[in-house]
Length: 206
Image 1 (cartoon, rainbow, N blue to C red):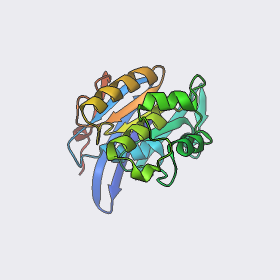
Image 2: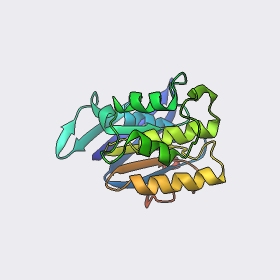
Image 3: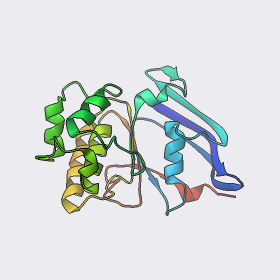
Image 4: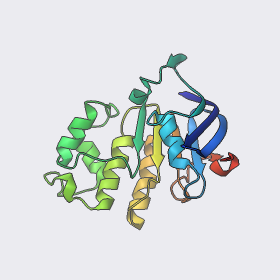
């Protein structure tokens, strides 16, 4: 997958969050860096199609075919603190529901994914009773284990303890080969595998 940004800008009312973002994102891992409020999450939402850019153009090419903005959601997996789970579901129900829209990698079964999660004795518990760390693990697994060419992770170690951070690093190391990966964060442990960077402070707000 190749995503090309041409002079992308986003503003809310008269406040420019960022302007003139021009880059090509190809297979590989990119860190989106910047202080709080610099526009990291906003750029992720624009790339994913959750927000429309105020200026500029985004194009998506997958297997030499242009993908329309209306269909790009099928090729993107996204985990972020502001993306909610269906909290009335149990774990099994959430996994089965999710794969109806974003199939998991062919070698993964529901039981295999539960093994990856390492959340013992929780499969019959509604997700609303999970701790914040358990919910974050589930969000990350749903995104990383879905068979899409693009993976977006916004502040992926939010609510994870030290053991959870180590688990996250193993997860992304296993499921990011041959994908375009964007990780927005200020925490080095989050974007440890990223060899390329987009620094939001390079794009003037005004």
